[in-house]
Length: 337
Ligand code: NDP
Image 1 (spheres, rainbow, N blue to C red):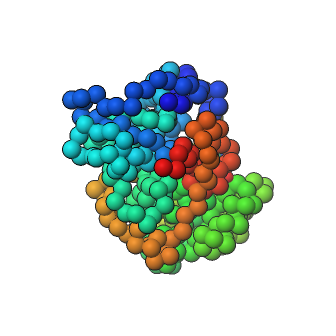
Image 2: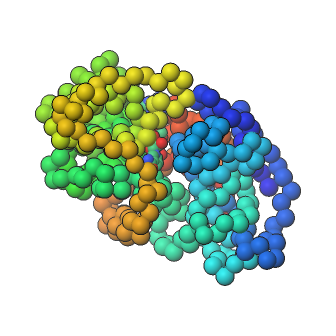
């Protein structure tokens, strides 16, 4: 059973050396009376929040990984043995699993059976998984979009951002995205239906860049990055604008976080700025699945993934999230069936 173990706590950005590949003897049978399932992991998800689990406990909403133990994350898996009536052999499930070929899952209430068959399996880690849900509640519940709103999304081609942009278009908004590479900007404009997009690495002055794309200001900023981009967005918000603080990926591993200088804009422009956690909205998950599945089937939403093959490449894929190596949702294919 090939496994990826967490080595030790980190302070800066994650590196491949923080994880190690091992092979363990694993009995491919569920212990009788355990109520567990044994799964074969097919696809594993790389998500930026996992970096937070590599730090020593600091009062976060989620506990840290344990050194020398298998890394945990979202996955799509196949049940190969079961000691619970909730799942039978052959079921496809998604939920928390281990970064390994086979996992014994004791807490089965976090697993969801995958019923719909015409959707690509890795989409359950992105479009129809936690990132898609984050985009759905973050945009529709936190940002309260209105027809004609001017919307700006950072890390726009990523797992969350690409859905925010498409939801903005479906809600009659004008949407511009920022990303860190030309290939991503091209995708935003040509495949994901953004009205416009720019590469923030090409801009000397982010404030001027935003003024170019939003000459009359921004109603909604969906912030995936924090740092200098948030600071520039604050200057460009319209009165009564809304900022959803989804993530601060530019600040992960920055020991001396870059300052935000423009918070006064919150007051002068009566901006509503709200942090949120997708897990506070789980009652909306069934509605989200129905709605996004319908959009996908109607061809109203597309989804871009970056799939690497082989569990041995999982550490590199994860680390790549923090330098923008991924184009779209980062998934690791462990096995196709
Ligand atoms: P992505 O798929 O967007 O991958 C991360 C991307 O972040 C990279 O591809 C890169 O894109 C960008 N990035 C990395 N480093 C920097 C940097 N220094 N400055 C600016 N951009 C950077 O990730 P997700 O879509 O999965 O997550 C997006 C955000 O949403 C994250 O901050 C994450 O923590 C947050 N999140 C929050 C949740 C919540 O409940 N609040 C739930 C899920 C995610 P580029 O090349 O364009 O720079």
